[in-house]
Length: 259
Image 1 (cartoon, rainbow, N blue to C red):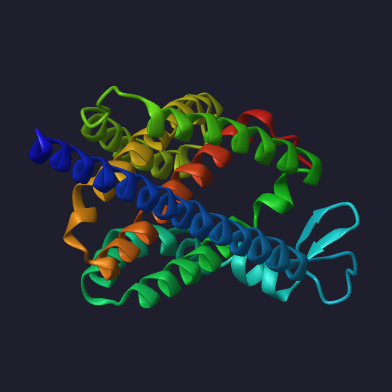
Image 2 (cartoon, one colour; image 1 turned 180 degrees about the vertical axis):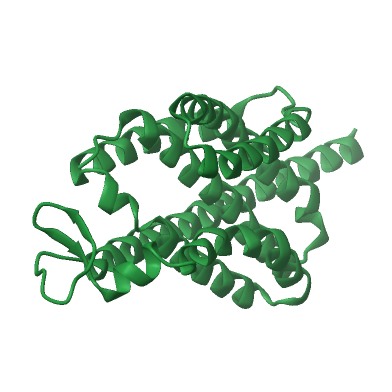
């Protein structure tokens, strides 16, 4: 009996240690994600401010009455460079992130994430040219509330969400293809359908990613490889960051008021 009690006590102690470590791990995930969001917002706002001017001197492109594109704005939004800016974050995630995770240190992975967040901010800066600041702020707050609820569900639910992963990722691939096609078609009906599906898909991915981050920590915590866990936290932060931004952008298509 004494031996059994010792085993139970050890198991209980180990479970408590994992719970404490899991909370610290999730705090690192959400903290890194939050810093990435701040970097993205700052970069987007700064670039948009440099790209637009009220002074028509030397400007050749008028956005609307009293607003013109600067030289930087013309370069970013009216030349082929806009395609580089648009697809650079996607290319990094598809082709660069995996290599960085395998070969880089935890600090290098974190730096790579923050650089990615800055590039994403440049890519998203055009929303300040299209939508009013009020609608951007409003949509961001709505997205934050929705994200918090979805992530909390993914963390606390006992239901296994792993089966959703393949279906949702296929949906993401379909969305990307549809968005590329609609760049040329410019169909409002197709854009509405893309927006609705995007909200649903990235809502599901938020819960799916959160549960995956939690399960990954629990499965690997006993190995004692803190460097790997630190990299896994940044990887989880990137997943949730991408889910949040996509949810925000698709909601903005519904809720955003154009200038």
